[in-house]
Length: 617
Image 1 (cartoon, helix red, strand yellow):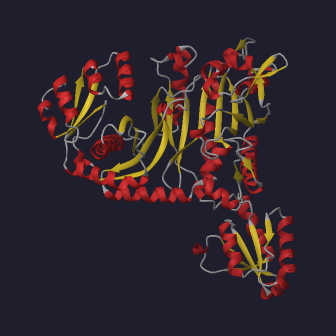
Image 2: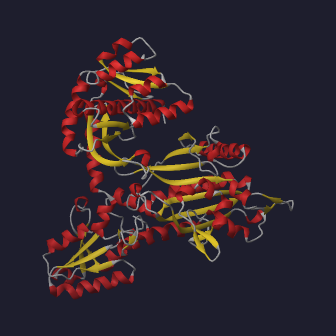
Image 3: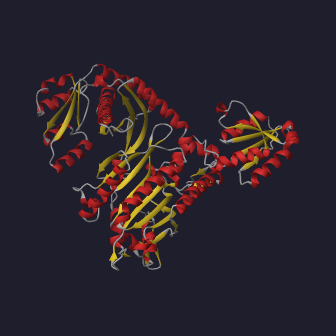
């Protein structure tokens, strides 16, 4: 990320953080501190939010948002100055004596032995304008005059004054558990966004509206792709025939490509002994995302959250020479991870999903070449789905937080240096992120921009030197000695579920012909054309084209409309003239891109549609 881009993001973050304080001040002005108690609220990549604890006799609703916005605008128009000052923990506890949430935060700050800071907002803060430290008298005075000046426990950062907020909008209200924990109290969360100019806000609101229309769950319902059933279980997708076709086409294309690139297919069970997960480190580092053990005979078993240990076992079942390496193992393996019910989001975040998983076991000398090949493979696969120019992040370990990771420092240093070297050699811009590595090694994430300009994290490549050590993975080198290999984890499409969800929203359900559940629909104009329509269908079907005839006694316009709702790429209209000449009139799904409807001989259309399917267009 360039310095100018970074500065822009930082300024927007400050602006939104300030808007969140303006929101809270407006809530106090309108409803009082006793009815809406401040909990917490940060700036986010898309805006801001704040969580409130409402009194039992007071309910926040979306009908209140216009009044809250009006009060926020009044505060913004006053161009109130914001000021950060330190405050003694004891004084802060008095100021926020009626707020259990702030008391909890103060306890956390006190444990770190860092100074507590508050932000003041308003004209009455001038008494402390030249001071770094807020006295008890000043703090209590500001608290008593909350309508004129506002105080909140906060580290910042903020813009200098409220007048810098040139455009904002409150979006919606939702429930949210304190700290996201279902065991805690349900709070009321107000979402909003803010920008430095109205044009950016207008563009953002358009994107929100478009995103709502493209919601993969809504499109899936119209196109009959998948469903979730409460009796079957939350977060467990059931694929209907149309959805299963798309899923299979994606899997077949990806898997066939991997086989062409030297991968070998493997398959592993859905459960494994608990001892395996303890040995791999998942039980210790990944426990919160795993389901409870199940007892089978006298042993404990787990639903697998990952495929890695199974692939390790397959590798270890044979003796390997350096001449055998690299070994590339690939599996479309279904895994199970515990997601809180409030975090479930259709197939974008389910509890059961199929990972497009592969593990490459290689010598240290082969590591760089394998990473380059993975990057090339990733870019090739995604180009076929219309995704290009990825944004890349390199996630490394935070040396100060070693409890989150396992392994020796020298191995971490080596793995991080190799990843960074490859990215630089390939001329790829990347952002280095400290503390976001997997527990067993550093990783590279590929983010692709979708049709609405949203960055979607899709591919992950990870270097692992820990599992080879824990499971005694070896190969025999050219001197006849056993050596420990490196292992690369690669989830190219991530999970099939998440990738499908992103693709549905990216295309708005208008899949390319090769992916469409129904590729061609034939529309006879009259009943006397039905037999001819079925002759055309048979020719297409013989060429493995997914095709149907709409034999309903409906007007042609109604049939076309229904086919468009189902996002069918090709509609073939057949009437008396087409039947007489052995032709079809081709109507494209994207009719506005088609200057006129084209008449083609049946064989010519079959060749054309087959070519598009083969070329993945």
